[in-house]
Image 1: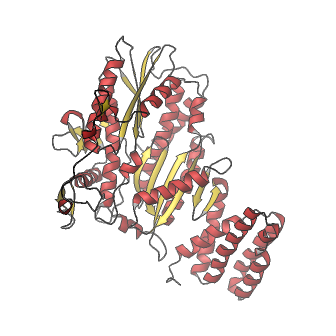
Image 2: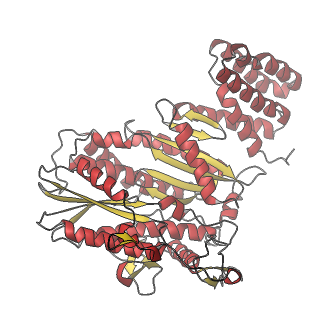
Image 3: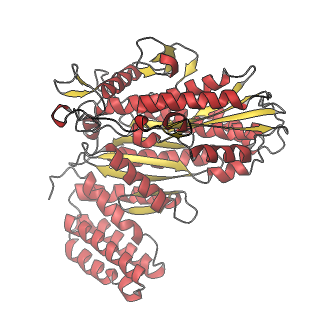
Length: 533
């Protein structure tokens, strides 16, 4: 779809979601059973690849694709259990199916859950789990309370069909006898000792395990598949129940529901994460890890009183924005960003640190417009050199999201470079950071003054936390003195005026602008093309 078509679809979905009197033409039946599917353990599984081993980006995409593909395939598996069943929603590792009720409807679902447990226990060794929940309804509405109770009960017994036999633990399932230590192979790409080694023929002569090799090949296939459809293929890289296998291609009837954008060089070859980092500004070629999550989605769904049409519209609006809209933006403007996953109500991408910051700010504005201000998201960004562990940096970004951005009153916030801002203020803060970075690049402001800003802003925060009112304003005379000492020539007058206005504003409004100085100074130092001082 074009950008205009995606935008029109989002506006139509928004209007449908917000229309309290809209007729229900969603296809949800007046009575029957609702079946929900939900992946658990996705993050740890997807983000396992170690950047130090070559091909990490391909393996990362391959694992993300597997989760999306298995969600779609399992939704189809549930749909085929019952006559006239239909998939109502499938995205972001979750799905919802409705089917006619029958006297024995629980039995086939229990059998399928045991089958899934058995297969996932063997295939993924407990790294991921897939849960099925179900509830009956007779009022033409989605039984959210019944599904929630069923899912809670199910999550108390993960992989029960694999680990329990004849009412007791089957220890042969989770206790594995290792070879003698000298012969144990530890994969440098995922750090596991559970798989056999293979040679990376297309990368170098190092060995990685057979699963990492499969993930890498799947990532390569995705790079050549603009439609990302699932195709049955005996030699495919995506394993499934009963020995079936699938590959990714441009034909087929089942969508993998993934963002298929891939950063590429001038020869159309996919970039590595190290090459992506080289696209960042400044001498420090760092990556930015962006995690974002929609605010208060659960309460938004509860407000819809279980009405299928409005729930479906909100679900599709979120998924369309975080997958299709993001896909368009990456393809048209933010070419160097590497999407890990997107859909449902969250997103995780990796890219040049400054590009990721710009992307997050623009996306926040468009999400606000698309939802008429009814929806927002919060974000956390972590920065690092390109060869640090992806999982640890993702967790750092998630910590910034959940422990800082989500905790700010009203949420709608971003945590980046050690500071937290609402989106309303961040756009102005980012413009100021651009301006200060330009001054620093042209030699109009010394690095010592930027370092002083970071130090003074940190001291102010500590003083406020300790209840030291005098300490909270001690930076003003220090900053006034140092600014006049370091900014003396005519070319530096705009910089000196900026500092003067900053100090004057603080006298009238102590919380205004000063909290952004740590971010502004760090951004300017990182963005500089000067040699490191």
